[in-house]
Image (cartoon, rainbow, N blue to C red; front, side):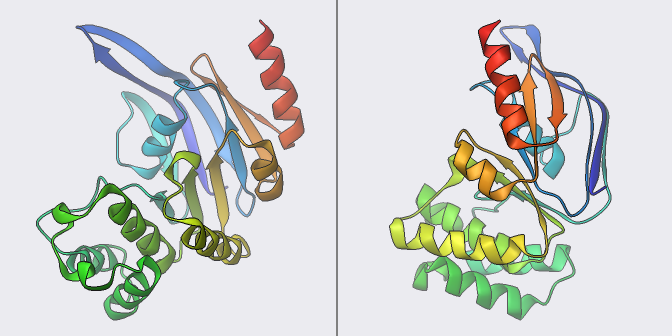
Length: 219
């Protein structure tokens, strides 16, 4: 397996009241297989990805990684706004033990930021930040990539470029993908899980998960 979640609980305080989002997730993601995640808006799918990535901690339980797992593609919250795009890339490359020059050159070329690559990230638009984040993600070899559908960025040519890079990574890495597009999940994922009521259930195929999600929505 590439990662495990053991009785993971996560919630947030709203108006002084603790509201659980994930109520006890127990799941093992198989190594070498890509897994889709289905669920209604607000079910906690993005929260789940952030916990897997380590950008948030669970309130209880444990996330165990057995390989190198990316941050959610397009996630920009980890950038230091005072540093340039180049400096952020070098910092991340150093953290992951990667070749600094290679990662920086790849991210510069992929993001298509030009001279802005050398400007402070705080001066970037949200789209520019997302381009940098995606390019940096593709510059580092991970065993599993986290993908949130809502992070699709850029114009049509750039999105096409992202899909090509995706297909290349898919040959040698797993995906954990949140999407509402059944065709996208079917094309990219071997298995699929449904997040409902704070719990996550894994199914052998995408269509089994789709059928299960429909049944849950009818309840």
